[in-house]
Structures are given as structure tokens and as C-alpha cells.
Length: 91
Image (cartoon, rainbow, N blue to C red; front, side, top):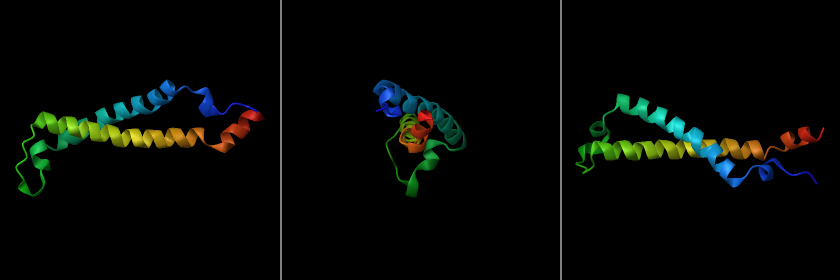
């Protein structure tokens, strides 16, 4: 029985393969988004929230990182679970 692609990649390498590209993507997305919008413009219904702009930037970055990590994980998962890629290696 041949080892699968997922068993050849350590857990640390899998985490780095997902988190590092999503981190870079979150940097670019945060820069682009907050260049266009100021945190005080993002408050719905004119609510008075006690958040500093730095807190809004941090929360926004973490949300961008979360969404990018989910996307990266989906790509990583479907790449490793692709049965046709395992079949081609055996040829």
C-alpha cells in the first residue's frame, strides 16, 4: 500500500501551508479595505461603539485572516484528497 499525500506531509507543514498564504492575503486585504474605509465609517445605524480605530483594524485583520485561512484550507484539503492525483503517481 502506497502512502497517501496527506500522510507524507507533517501537521506543522500543513498548518504553515494554510496559515502563511492566508496571513499574506489578510495583510493585502486589510491594507486595501482600510485604505478605502475609515473605522468610524463602518459603524451601522450610527451606534456609538467604544472601539478605538486600532481595535477595529485588528479585528478586521483577524477576520480577513480567518476567511483567507478557510479558503486556503479548502484548497489544501481538496488538493490532498484528490484521488486522481494519487492514481497518477502510481503510473
